[in-house]
Figure 1 (cartoon, rainbow, N blue to C red):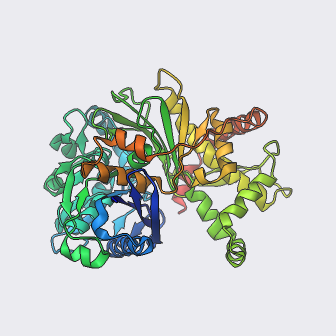
Figure 2: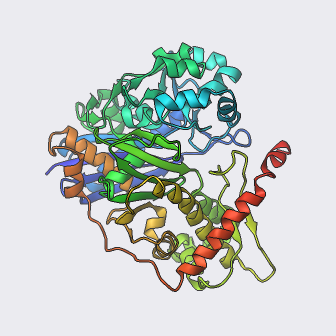
Figure 3: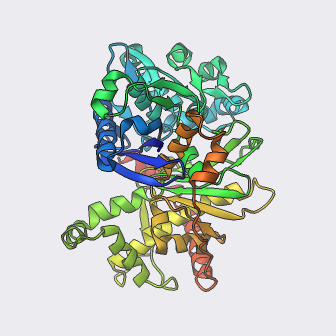
Length: 507
């Protein structure tokens, strides 16, 4: 029997999973790497530790399942987009990797907007410029660490670095690099003029050759085989940006559905045959189905806020859950269920890591009183994260000629029944989840299956390997309360907008 391995590298978590041709998950292994925070607004990781983490989860999932490595027909990786992973000319990482939640380069997009660069860039890349995109980070490094760029051999995105370590071959897969402001979306190639506009033309030759998601981009080397338990010579597909992988995994690869991914990032996306060129959405990029563009609204404002709240403010609850052999997240779900939708909770702005309204916006609770408990604050976090997704959704809906048939939800939120219901109540559309835990890894496994020649394309793989659960519909009784609080959330964002720059000066 054939199996396909998907490897998913998020901001701090690395996962490997094995899937059969019918989408059955034989096993999953995961581990974490440390997020390094050398300064406020900086988020990094040790690239060698990250590589060892990949070796560990691959080895563990093979051992866990007992599957013969010879039965693994292909491997593919996905990873967080944006960020930056530099490989040195000396055969070592040139510096720590930069994660997509990094905000050190926040001034560069503002500068490029003021001097007209952003408008010229949009004409070619069809993208607004983000502080966490490679172009912003490279500009920052050019100004602050020029010696690092001088010694760099390859400019990688997250999963392309991992694939390079698996195969020893350097490629840049198109879904990631077309979302990095490197690629002209009309020619589907790197554009020297884009690099010149950013003042980065000196580094063009460090960008690896572009490939498609389902192209074979090398094979497992003998050294990698020894470290991971994979069979040397196993083909490795190009893989994809993790948000493409999730959209494929939830079988939303058509124009009828919107996909939301609620992980560290709030990802809100759909596909269409033409990019949105009026500037109303944040990102257009090339999708893993070549005939489509991915239309994206996103920010690092999602479930990472919940994880921080639990780890930082509820340590005793985590310990109690561990002793009781249960999940702390099940306990927080119960906390939220204990607070009815009709009861007012403080309005939470989920900007612990980044913002989708102002580059310097920070997290806050508005409306807190001595009546409120930690349960109320937990519901505030659940709702605030949903509010940020809704803020993005409203922008996407303005670019569509027809409403979506449903929203397909992935990420940690999709595993919480109470949170999924909050999303349905607030968005006003049916919410569907899929019967798989690791959507990113499944999307990668689909790419590996296509590269191995076992499916014609990713659409066919999604039809065969993805199972959609029954829809969760909006609760007519709860929806008005959520809508009222969302409108208040928007007013709070407007009111706080003049504050953030002054706050930033104190940091």
